Length: 161
Ligand SMILES: Cc1cc2nc3c(=O)[nH]c(=O)nc-3n(C[C@H](O)[C@H](O)[C@H](O)COP(=O)(O)O)c2cc1C
Image (tube, rainbow, N blue to C red):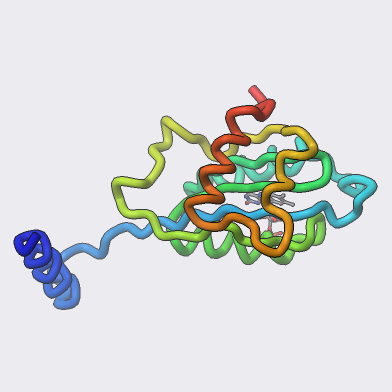
C-alpha cells in the first residue's frame, strides 16, 4: 500500500515539474433527453441525426451509443475531455431535443478507455417505450447505477447494423 502511494506521489511530483507527459484524459457522459416536439423529430429523422453524428464523431475520436424509444434519447459517449465537453455543449444547444439530464459524467483512466475496435463512432438503435422510465422521476439512478441500467437496456435494444 505504502509503495503504491509513494509511486503515486512521485508521479504527481514529476507531472507538476513537467517531466512526464500529461496523461490522456477521456470523459464519458450518459444523458437522457426528450424530443423537442412530442409529435416527432420535426422534419429530422433519427437516421439523419445518427449519420451526421457518426461522421463528426469519427473526425474527433468520439465513440458513442445513441438509443431512441420514439420519444426519448439516451446517449452514452466518450472521447478526449475537450471533445466530450464540446459535444455536450452542442447537445445542450440542439433544439431537436430538450430537458437534457446528465445521468453519469466521469473521467476515465487509461485502462477504462473503450478501444476503437470495441465501439465505433456511433452505434444507434431503438428500444421499447418503457425502458427509459427508470431514468425519470425526482431521484433517477446516477453514476455507476445509471451505467448499469443503460448496459442492460442496450442488451435488449434493436441496434442498427
Ligand atoms: C439526440 C442527439 C444526438 C446527437 N449526437 C451527436 C453526436 O454523437 N455527435 C455529434 O457530433 N453530434 C450529435 N448530435 C448533433 C449535435 O447536437 C449538433 O447539432 C452537431 O454536433 C453540430 O453542431 P454545430 O451545428 O454547433 O456545429 C446529436 C443531436 C441529437 C439531437
